[in-house]
Each structure stands twice: as C-alpha cells, then as structure tokens.
Length: 359
Image (cartoon, rainbow, N blue to C red):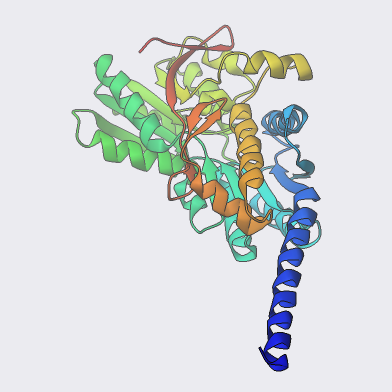
C-alpha cells in the first residue's frame, strides 16, 4: 500500500471518529439540558379558577415525574385574551427559548398556533376546534366534537326530544361543536328549531331567549363560557325555563349550583385515584380540564424521553408516533392530524357536583 493511500485512510478514520464523538457529545449535552415548557393560561379574569387548576396540573406532573429529564415550567397569564396570548407566546419563543408551549381554549390556541408553527415549537392546546392542530407542530388534547355530539344525540333520542333550540356565543371552539352537532343531527328526526348567536361581552339575553321560546323547543342547548354562561342561565331561569342542557360547558362554571339537576354530555372522567391525589396536594377541588393538562405534560415527557434528539423537532416527531399511551383519561392516541383522542360521558350536576349518569 503506498504512503498516499495510507494517509487517506487515516484521515478518513479520524474524520469518522470526530463525527461519532461529536454526535455522542451532542446527545449527552442535550439529554442533560432542562426541557422548558411555556404555559399560557388564564390566571386572572373570569377563567382564573380554570387557569389555576391547569397550572396545578402541570406542577403535579413535574412533581410525580419519575424519569431522568429535568423540566422547567414558565407560566404566563393571558387572561383569556388572544392578543395577550400572542404577546406572551412571542416572549416564550424568542426570549425564554422554550421547547414546548401549552395553553387552553380555542381563541388562545388559534392565536398562538401560527406562531408556534412558524417557529417550529411543539404546541399543545386544550380545545374543541380542530383548526388549532393544523401544521406539523400544533396539537390538541380534548374530547373531539364528533364524540360529544354523538353521545348528546343518542341521549336526545333516548329522551324522545326532537326539537332543540340553541343559544351560543361566537367562539371558534363552540362553532366547531355546533357545526358537528348540526351535521350529525341532519340524519335524525331531531330538528334545530332555533339558533341565537351572541358576542362575547353581551349581558342581556332576554330578547334572544324570547325568540327561541317562540319555536317551542323541548330543550334549550346553552353553549357558552363564563361569565355569559351563568348570566344566560340565570335569565333562562327567570323566565321559568329549566329544560336546559349543554355539551361540556357546564363543567367550566365556578357556579355549578346554577345547573343543579341538569343532564349534559361532558368530558371523560379521569382514572381512579387521580382526583384524590390532586385534591390532597392542592387542598382544592379539581377543576375543568386538569386531567387533560396532566396528560399533556406526560405526553411531552414521554415524547422527549424517546426522541433521538431532545429538541423541538425531536419532541414533535415522537408525539406524532404515539398510538397508545396510558393517560389518566384512559388509553390515548395521537391521530395523524395531531389530535389526542379521549372520550365523552353523560353527566348530571347534583348539589353543585358533577356525577356520571348511566347511559
């Protein structure tokens, strides 16, 4: 073998060793770094109670995590305002350099998702609207409108209800629920005899209720969040209207006594023991979507653990690979659209507390 060939082989071997050692070093460094999760939550305002619960859910996830990763939670208050959400999302992406962003509610998720997609930051939201999950980096973890509508219609048929009137707020998530309900109900004998849409911030619903009352529905379907949810319910009651139901939204209310003895379709209850663990740690009752946010943390942890490179792209890729995950909301899968599927349940509120009804 000539000297030139020998040196060529040596150089190639050296280069290969450098690359291998460099990759190993990079993997060791990234695997030991802290994973930053930015949480955009309504920590003040009308949904502060929900926001506090979601914050606690993330904290509980970190507290109960048994793996080797380190996590840092960075909380930002959006007060359920999309413009504020955009501002704090930009901060989390560009200044805090977070690895993942989580949030809740359709208006927030829709405002944040274009930023996270452009910046290539995994983003997990709790909301109905599937549009939030558009793109490679956006995900949602919530009971899909199709499951909620299907169970709601099944209960309407069981109760011989074939005329319903809808009072709803103009909101992307609620629009998704209504559109799916309208689509599914078209193949049944059930008719939507009235549909009144109001804007966030409205406070007097009496004329809208009067319009719906003229249609003589057997059931009023109230689709809103606080504070309009409670104000509308109080005005319905003042007009002696008590045949009211919803798809999920009673669960969001801090004044559940308003909805005593009303049946509705809600999100799936968590596995046994989770509520007790949460309430033992935080000394407060569990609130809306806490199990979803707890599952979201564990999905992030699982994806990060299994990612070849523990960065934004690696976490995103692993999230999309999850076909079976044992969450507190049961066995979860992430479908190709980035939607984490969980179930729906028939419920009733008694003495201000939610109970499951037998279907």
